[in-house]
Image (tube, rainbow, N blue to C red; front, side, top):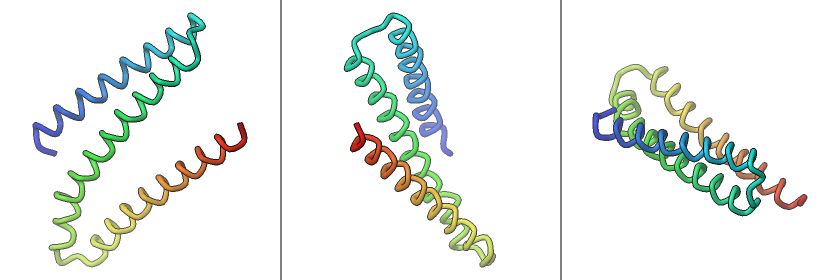
Length: 103
């Protein structure tokens, strides 16, 4: 990971952590639910952005090295890892959708 990406990821994670502490405080203070939900969505958006940045970095560095390299097993392992990440993302999105449908 290059230094600029590392700094950006670190800043976004610190911001998300600050939002989380704020949400904890809001829960303790029995804040308005919609206000808490908006803060939760801000944390989710920040983490999604970090995830996208990390995936982009991975594809441009680790994945590129594996694809260009001679080790077929390593290439396959990398492809399976990326596929697993997308599968988990899909499962999480479906789970969230199902939960909102129940409410």
